[in-house]
Image (cartoon, rainbow, N blue to C red):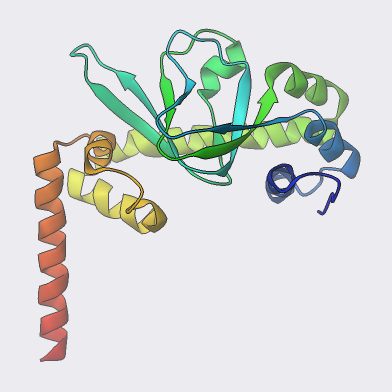
Length: 211
């Protein structure tokens, strides 16, 4: 859906909405897109801090962010990475408008489309398809969260790593080993060993195929 009166970042947001919910009307898209705010953040800046109430959900037009918490040992634990054409938020805290327990920081310079809680609630009240779009976003969020929980219950560290790289090849050169190892729940040393093991296996496999 092309709404040419909007800037490229807002147009990308409109396109993302229609991919998730094709039934959205031009009126519904226009309602949201005319009320969003485009912001730019430099790398290593906070989009959200623990203890804050998140007034806006972000849609990522450009850049990469990570969400993390601080455990009882004072260590940062990476929860997720957020890349282009995805939403970034502490969803539960946003919906309840209660203080978040998480931090969300930029890993790269980012361009974000911010949609306020008040705007979304008004849109959901007035437009049936917009409400359905919100439900689909919530379902997607819950599915991804359950997938992460399952990965720690039913997969080992090597499986979590191979699954991550198969699904996020575009992120391998954009995130640090420290952040990735934290996300996978292993030490840097363990992740390094896993990567070396996989590289060696791939090398041995290629050699055997050439014989």
